[in-house]
Structure formats: structure tokens, C-alpha cells
Image 1 (cartoon, helix red, strand yellow):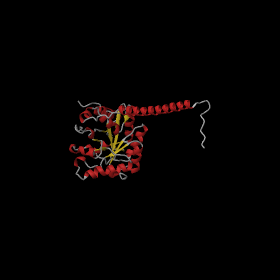
Image 2 (tube, one colour):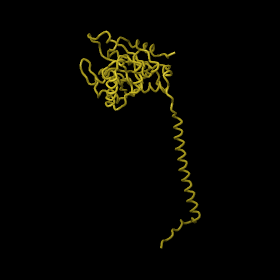
Image 3 (cartoon, helix red, strand yellow):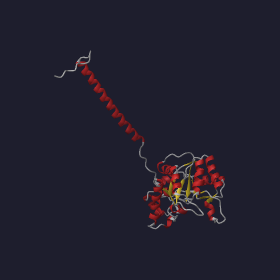
Length: 295
């Protein structure tokens, strides 16, 4: 025969039952309160992060332009260089002087994602924002350009022409490891076609050769999506701009020509910093070219 358990000393069965009932009710209330807190917290988060409607082309055109600089070769001029080539060449000493001027003047570098969020969703930018870009994959952009930017805590955008990766000759080009390092250090790796073919002359086949395959190659190297593009020679064709969006690009960069009013995200202006400029010349050029809004 099983023995009945006696209630604890000094507690009648009635009091013990009442105690158990109160304890069970308290636990139930606590669980309900926890559910309410969790539900309220989730609702508050949703209310604090509403989806913002993207700006249309007209609104983007009306925004103040952010200065974007473009560099090609960072080396000393050679006797064999053409007069035209001098615009795309800046000596290492002058490049360092110009970047120091930007830092001393209070500029802060931004990357394409920040610019995109500013233009489309009115995202915040640092005081005196500027973007520094490099075209064509030259090795001196890594050895001189990246080293100089790092000295001032700056980041850059590297538009890669994939046919050149790893090539050596009169001009040496960045390797896959160089490109991966730039990406890992927080710089943006972007597309500049396969072999610098003029965008305005693209055939149907070129969308695979010049756009799709280079994008895939750069993504394999960096492990990151490639979402930005720079036109060779800064030349674009208005009727083809919509295709860049179809191929996954969020924005594209020209040079100093006028933007397309229907596709301002795909015709973001840049200016070249020519080797003949002093640091003061560059400062004035930035202010003249970008410190204005479209009326």
C-alpha cells in the first residue's frame, strides 16, 4: 500500500492548494507580459524603419553633386608620351601632394554605396564628401594610389579592365591578389569592361564579353557583388543606359560631360585630376565643377 505524503509541517492542505494556485497564476502572467513586450518591440522596430520611396530622376538631378575625381596612371612622364596622354598621367609626388591637400582641406572619401543612398534615399554623407576613382587597373594605382589613400584613412574605387589583370610590360597591371587585397581593405572594386571598348559602339555580343563576363570574374576574385561601372573614355549611349540596370548595376560613371536627365544614376559625373594641376588648381576645379545644383 502506498503511503500518502503528509503536507509540510504547519501548512494545511487548503493553504498549500491556495499557494500553488497563486504561483501558477503569477508564472502565467509573467509569460503573457513577456509575449506583449516582444510583440511591442517588433512593432516599434517596424515603425522606426519605414520603407522610403526612391527618388525619381528629377529629384536626383536637383541634388547637389558630390565631387568625384578620376585618375589613370600615377607615374612620371616619358618622352614617348603623347600630349593627349599627359592629361591621364600624374606624377607620384604630385598625386601625394593633391591627396594631402584634400585631407588638409577637410574632405572625407565616400564609396559608391554611400553616394547611391544619398541620391536615391536621401542618406546622410560626411561633411565635404568626395569620391576618388581609378580607371584601367594600372599597378601604380595599387603601389602609389592605395598606399597614399591609406595614409590619410581614405578609400577609393577601382574600375577594373579585366583583360589587363596580371599583365606586365611597359605598364604593369594589378594582379588578382592586388585586387582582392583592395577589396578586403574596404575599397570598392567595379567594372570598366573587358578591354576598354567604347560603350557607344557595343554590339549585342558585347554585353556578354564586355559586361557580363568581367562582372563574374571580378566577383569571383573579390567574393562580393559588382554593382558599379565606368564608361571607357567617359562615353555613353543614352539608348543603352537602361540595360546597365538590367545587368545588375546600381550606378555608372562618365567624365565631365552633361548627365542624362532620364538616367542620372547611370551618368554620374567625374573630373580628371590632370598632372599639370597644382593642388590649388585642383581645389578650385572641384569647387567650380561640383559646388552647384541644377536650376
